[in-house]
Length: 174
Image (cartoon, rainbow, N blue to C red):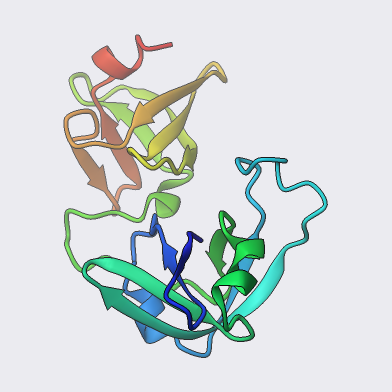
């Protein structure tokens, strides 16, 4: 949640979601806002809040949202910098066949692109502003982080539940 915009209680949002359009279609839905540990003071003492989305508009490519009960720029100051999480069921499916929901890959086998050898499993991921990172747990239990980009992850086979990784590059990064 960013700074306020205008005088009616709208605030700018920096969207990290794979489904940024969800805000436009979910007027009246509840979202969870959590104080970010990256804020000055680390968000200590601040409690998470469930807020209802009252409006969302696109203003020159920026997402502006309005939360119920926040009607002025001053009222938004207390939640500026907070992280926004969807509280409902997440049923979004990518329209593009080359696009993946990274959280669906947890538990998939990870195979070397050159040898097809099993190197581990996807244990999780880290959602980062620059790029998402797959957490690969190797057969010996080590965590190796792999940027989730096409040159390093050339293929995902949902049917086989496999992620193909250029292990000659990724496996040497640790």
